[in-house]
Amino acid sequence: MDQRPDNRTEIRDFLASRRAKITPEQVGLPTSGRRRVPGLRREEVAVLAGVSTEWYTRLEKGHINGVSEDVVEAVARALRLDEDERTYLFDLARAARPARRTPSRRKDVEVPPRVQWLLDSMTMSAAFVRNGRQDIVASNSLARALHAPVLDSATTGRGGRANIARYIFLDPGSHRFFVDWEAASVATAALLRAEAGREPHDRALRELIGELSTLSPEFRGQWAAHDVRIRHDGIKRLWHPEVGDLELTYQSLDLPVSHRAVHDLTVYSAEPGTPNEDRLKLLASWEATRARTADASHEPL
Image 1 (cartoon, rainbow, N blue to C red):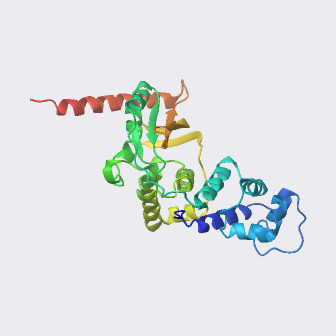
Image 2 (tube, helix red, strand yellow; image 1 turned 60 degrees about the vertical axis):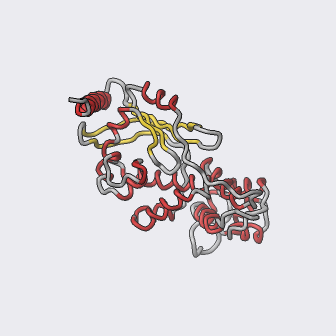
Image 3 (cartoon, helix red, strand yellow; image 1 turned 45 degrees about the horizontal axis):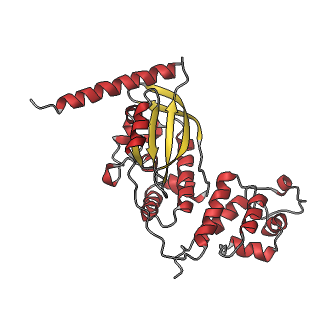
């Protein structure tokens, strides 16, 4: 039985959005006359990909099932897709193929103890693990202190897990916590878009996207852009209620936790010898004091 999802709309909108971003001049094509819409025409993409206009038009309408990987690769090159966008397009093509068996629902995977040991060993960096839905599933003490506004937010989802996407788009306080809120929102929507391509059968993910689309105009706008992001690193500027402004470097790495599930390990660090390192140390001290107070309150009288 064919169990593939009907993802023709996603394919159509993604290819059309990428085509609109490229001008004929960028790819060395001649221009003539006024254009009704920005970007390349379908026939121009077809020429660059080495396929007929009819074939590319059918592909952009979402009929990607049965298209060879060579053709998908040629289209990716013609549209100048970056590595993340190319991966997403191949994920969409894979999801459109007839399934040989009913796809299993993805189950949440517990983080192995060894991963928590790894996180706890990082005493001068804030390290945490999140799944593709942006749930925070494990963290060390410094990450818990750093993300206190996220963890204490009323947007915490079912099961008590904080979700970064829900916090960013549904908690007004996120605009202060994330100094570069616009960049954070763009990246988060793009990460969810990539996850939706990887896991088209994830019902919890679809529910999250539906919730954010219903409740957040900002998310709806970001989602409609069809931007994709898989790997990310750089500078993050935060404002923490206990220590004020922080400018931290961050690096995200793939973390396989089972034969099927791959989570994301993210580490925030401060440049040595800077005020940011001093504030991070102060935050670590604050968290240690808070933890001791909490332990003392639970001791028997």
